[in-house]
Image (cartoon, rainbow, N blue to C red; front, side):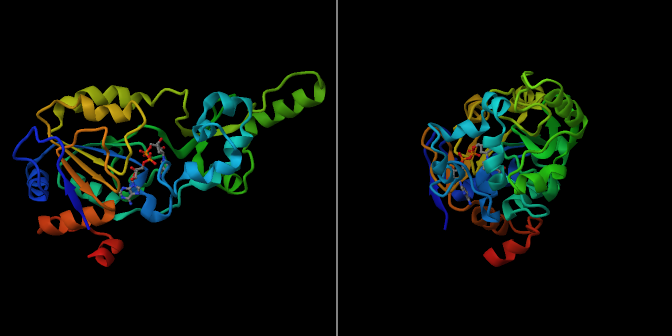
Length: 296
Ligand code: CNA
């Protein structure tokens, strides 16, 4: 069930689902912005929906649930983050029909870039190539020691995360233990020698690739599609305002996004919308995904 809503009306001819199909057929450089909503069908909660992660954190009594991703808080005491990190740990070897849809845009040579805010790294698993993907908020794919910057594959600490334990860096553990033993008066930060997944916390800069690519992509794209994001976190949320005015913008989302001016809003579950679009686009637009057949 897809509700079509047109807000912008600036491009008079761009208003209906047929126009969306036409744009998908004709566009050659599509900039896709994605968020947590493209992974919720896999059981990963988003942040801000009523069933979302932030509502599940109410028992912590935080003044703002975003504090669990606050860098200063993590450096002071990583235990808060590791008490809840298991809840957002990505499943492995799984992706949604919507991920397949982005892959399809790539296979058809239409994907300029996918700017994802997701940290689950499932785009990579779905086959979106690293040159087409900007993980704006990093991902769980790697983790780095806060102290010595030793970087490891993220999956190495997944078991610890599942057990709500703090993962310590093997290179720093010796020093940590020595310091603790040598002098009880010595101050050692709680985060000394702690691994942090390479996801961008509040207070951290976005990965360099975001800044390297965004300006050029903004001027090159001929269509913007925003999928499964509430567009509340800058600077990714600002992309929609920075796209040149002649570039049409399509929203695919469960809820309307009233603070942005999309030409076409396709409101519904994004897997359903993607399946519908692929079906209507016909030959050459097969969405290879087992869930797709169920939806169809
Ligand atoms: P958000 O603010 O929680 O918004 C999610 C949006 O997706 C909402 O507008 C929902 O209406 C919509 N939505 C939810 N389910 C569906 C669905 N099945 N189909 C279509 N729309 C749906 O999340 P944002 O991504 O906007 O916020 C950015 C944060 C979320 C980033 O920093 C991420 O790291 C973070 N996040 C990522 C994941 C992940 O990697 N899977 C999970 C949870 C949060």
